[in-house]
Image 1: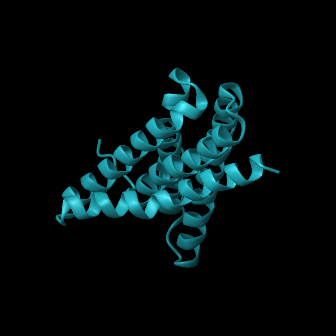
Image 2: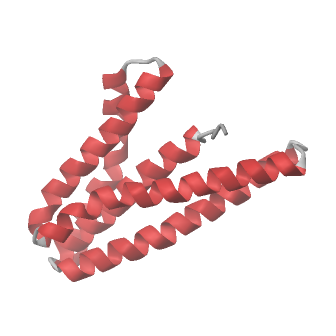
Length: 164
C-alpha cells in the first residue's frame, strides 16, 4: 500500500506548529515566568490550532477540488489525507518548542526552546532541499530565518504586555 505524503500540508503544519507554539511560549514565559501557565497555554494552543488547521485544510482542499470538478471520491480522499497530515504535523512541530519548558524554569527555557525550534526548522528545510534536489543548506537557512520572525515578535509582545 502506497501512502502519498502531502508535502505542502506536512511542511506547513510542522513549520506553523513550531513557530506558533514558540511565539506563544516565549511570549508567555517572558511575561509570566510561570511553567504551569506556559505549558498549559502551549498545550491548549497545540490542540486548538492543530484541529483548526486540519479543518481548514480539509475545507480548502475540498473546495479547490470541487471548483475544479474533480470526482467526489478523489476529492474526499485528498481532503482527508491533507487534513490528517496537517493536524499531525502541527502537533509534532508544536512539541519541539515546549520540550525545554518541561525541564527548565520558564525564563531559562526560552533560549533552549528557540535553539531546538531553529534546529527543527533547519532540519525540515534541509530535508526539503534534499528531496527537491536544491541547495540543502540554503533551504534549511531559509526555513529557519523566514519562520523565526513570528517567534521574535511574540517575545517582544510578551515583554511589552508584562510591563503594562
